[in-house]
Length: 231
Length: 408
Figure 1 (cartoon, rainbow over the protein chains, first blue to last red):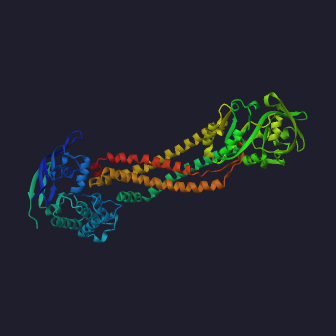
Figure 2 (spheres, chains in turn cyan, brown; figure 1 turned 135 degrees about the horizontal axis):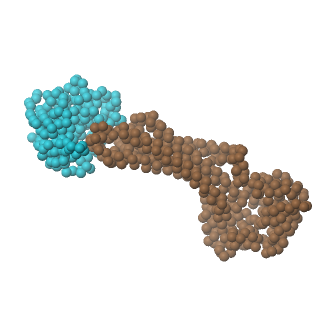
Figure 3 (spheres, chains in turn purple, blue; figure 1 turned 30 degrees about the vertical axis):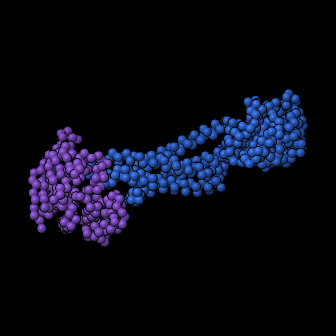
């Protein structure tokens, strides 16, 4: 399968504090098209740092991140903005929808930044909201949606622009069990249907049990990298 | 761009009360600045108009030496050259007012006072300053009459009444003695004591005979069609006259003390206006800072998902522009209504305040101006201040640490 992301000797050192913190140590990983991967590990193990770096939000101290044949670690900020917009979808723990936009507008937002045609954008946004079971909530603003519904809108937003892969930072952490399962079902289905690569950072056993690959980080280094057969 | 405008507009109404308070503060600042400037300009216009009509007019053509040494020997003849010149600019000149004047001694019986004799064409003066409306006893003479109209204060000091004879004695043109007796045919009341205790009006021809200066004038006053054309017209007239013989002076050159007084007062009002601007500037800045810090996390997220820093900065700038625009617009609306009202219904002054105006020979009222430039200037100034304040969020966004912001 096609490699979507490849990291080589990825390291990150935070020098803000008195003692430098080694958040990542020589991480070498590859992610293939359509993978459903969970990155797990205790707090401070480097999960979020890893996602931030492969998401182009942060720069490594050392090493390379090759996405689509391009080393994003060497990109300028302005190039990274464009790169993120075109290649990466994000789902955050706290939903992070734009409160003044409706569900439909939130889902359309990234496509709008990508300068897609209005017709195409609206059609895709409506379809995505239908797929996450919120076809009847398209004109609702986030404040009028439950946590689970907001996170489903966030998933629709991340997937609507057809990114190469989606990074989800503890997406189920704020959801009740039913909402979490519902969200995971949707994400698993979209992963299959749209062949989109999903990479989660999580503590949530419910997510780990769905993932076909589980990478365990400990103290910034890869401790385990396991593959599972899932139904 | 449309989405950025929608986002900015909706963000504005996330906290309606705060937005209303900010818009109100901009509105009141714009309104107060407009009211302040309107009052200042209105009062200035009123004073200028009053001073100009009762003293110098807008422009004077004089003998070249008269301004530096204002004596009768430096009077000028109203030549064909000057008359032709005035005709050439008739489309910019409302009318002209010829005058001859000089200081003399005015007496009755054993009493005498220093008086200021002014020879006038009554119909021209009427147009310039409605002089006859101030006549309280008797009547204003016509150009062909030969009697005097004197100020009420002088009449009291010399115990002169209608029909009495006023004796005038002074120096005329080129050292001749100016002497004459004139029957008092009218008494005129001035608000300004200086005028009320000294003025003696004679028909122009009588005054020219009295001073031994037939056909001569101290100045030819030119009343312009449009006040804003004063400088331009004066320059055009000066270009056509021989500077060796004639000088053209504007009222600002003739009344430098008044101009200095106006400038000093204008500076005070401008200072007050700038204090207002600073207050409103900080008001807007406070709101912008609060709005920024409340949304730092949201900014981090927006940047994470692909919004560019410039686009985010544009949203914040648009929010500032919208708040300022709404506030300025409301302030202009309120200011226009208030100044229009007070322009047509001026505030009548009383007591010591009124006396100050009277001493300046100005009607004791506060008349507001609603000239468009007041609204444009004040509105633009406050708008620019808001835009300057809007630089803060732009700087902040351009330096924002996206990850830290998103974690907040």
